[in-house]
Image (cartoon, rainbow, N blue to C red; front, top):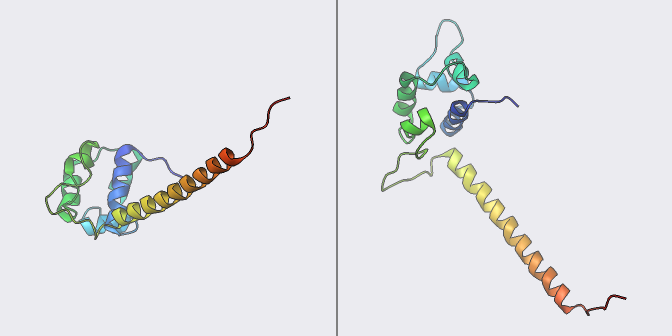
Length: 133
């Protein structure tokens, strides 16, 4: 698995959210890259590898197409990932749906293990105590 910079990780999150599937498609969607060289996603890949910083110009293009993302978070990693509004609705967010699914599955596992632990403790309490010889 490739190692990405923190900026690269944030870009990956935005690309996942977009549903575009790959860097080239995402670059095409936000309108960046060299159309003639067939290297449309190269600017984003350089950011992911740590060769370049995420520019204000690219960040603005991303925010223009995905305004829910917080530009400060995108550029620096600080603050909230999404801009906060009174009517936040992330039902259209694939990343959020996946996170919610994982949280639900983990909660079910925790509940299952909690019940097993209670039964185990009850069995221990009900066993006759033996003296050490």
